[in-house]
Amino acid sequence: MTVSDPRPSVEGMAEFRDADLHDARFTMVDLTGATFRAVGLHQVVMRNVEITHTTIDGEIEDLVINGVDVAPLIEAELDRRFPDRVLFRPTTADGFRQAWDRNEELWSATVERARRLPPETLHESVAEEWSFVETLRHLAFASESWVGRAVLGDPTPWHPLSLPWDEMRPRPGVPRDRDARPSLDEALSLRFAAMALVRGVVDGLTDEQLDVPGAPLVGPGWPDEGDSFTPRRCLRVVLNEEWEHRRYAERDLTVLEAQRSGAQNDHGSPSGPSAPYSRTP
View (cartoon, rainbow, N blue to C red):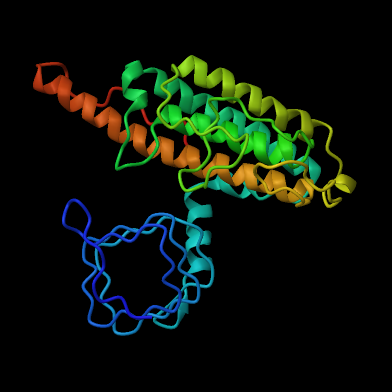
């Protein structure tokens, strides 16, 4: 497949959206400044490439750079930087309980940090990512989907404000109100209800139940109708969502705090961050 004349976007840049570029070849192509979001890069080969000043966030496995599989090195470094991270890969029922306990503690600190900002700031996007309130809405969706639906069997567990990932195609019964602007407390009410679903499951979980598949899912939604999952898989998905989105939220709160501090300094307010970088793992 050869792509020689991509359609320019409104801004004059080439844009590929919802495109299938399987087995495409790019030769002598300049991708400087390009942005990739929600992109699959599986079995990709790059030769004679120049990569500088590039950041990658995502799920990475079997990434070989100049003959070295760097994925295990990245995992080890992340575990070193964030000791709590290993708790979010539990193997026993007690481990899942311990992970959820710690998750509640960490998120409590993150929410308290967010409360120090003006309410309208919590609806602001940083670098086109979800706002803090949108992040809470999405995590509610994840818990409702993977625990309420996939573990507990509720065919429609979602609150109207629950927020799926942006690239999910519309599905009957699944909410998708990207423009809603609930207050922080409204988003937290939704979030706490979804967290309670997870708490109820992990509190009663036994090692014997971890790998027992549930009944096939009923009705349209997410995950897909007819699929069946073990509690281990569902809870690992939720824990991964919780860990990664809290990390993103903390990162973006740092930016929002710095912006607010700068604005205050421009008006003669004391310098320094508006809140400490509180209790991240």
